[in-house]
Image 1 (tube, rainbow, N blue to C red):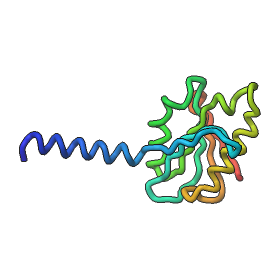
Image 2 (image 1 turned 90 degrees about the vertical axis):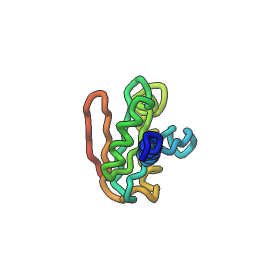
Image 3 (image 1 turned 180 degrees about the vertical axis):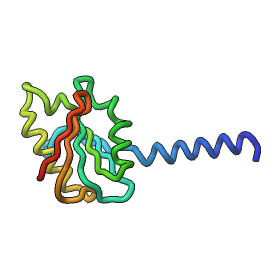
Length: 126
């Protein structure tokens, strides 16, 4: 194989790998806050709610994608929509959890909430 064939092969492999971790963005609506959901490779998987820090969710997309590659249905939320006094954060989180649990990518049962900047994690039953 020549060099251009090797390069093309690597580019296709990189594109395929990034497509596996690509999230699906949902705008905020009556069903919950804005989110980006990452389906596990073999659906369904346990739900993991990932809350970003104050900087917003964009720098946590790779982290949420990594979680989905471990077999979880990762839902990335903007922590500013949850950990806030300007909105009803508890209600926003409740709606986001309910929306995630209705997904065909989610296993019923326990779910995990991660707030990455503080390295906090908690497990809860729906």
